Length: 174
Image (cartoon, rainbow, N blue to C red; front, side):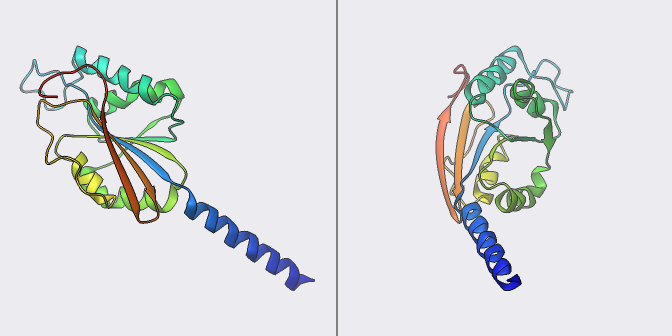
């Protein structure tokens, strides 16, 4: 009898692992919205008015996506980009270090199957982050005055699909 219970438990556990492996991880990656450049000495500026509007546009775009977690670098502009969505859905923004992107990606791939994640970074970090997930860069670069790109990564096992879109008002080179 105990062997039968063990076998049932083992089969159930394997089925759960198989189901978990079949679930896709969805990750939206954005650059922070426009920053306030009125004080050139400020290394950690707030968002400009345009940036605040773009952050609101991001919230409106993703509010129905059932986002489970939001990750941001430890700068005001990245946190403020994700804040309207975090506030709307009632979650706290988690910080990550761009220099530890491999650890973030590994953690998400191992523990977040079936989840929906938003990551807010910088023009010089988000393409590298996409590569860390195992995808090719969808763009050669993001210029300093380009805002509004949103990348959707769908990760299932070792397969990564990347979709590129834009959101918010057109500003700069976009």
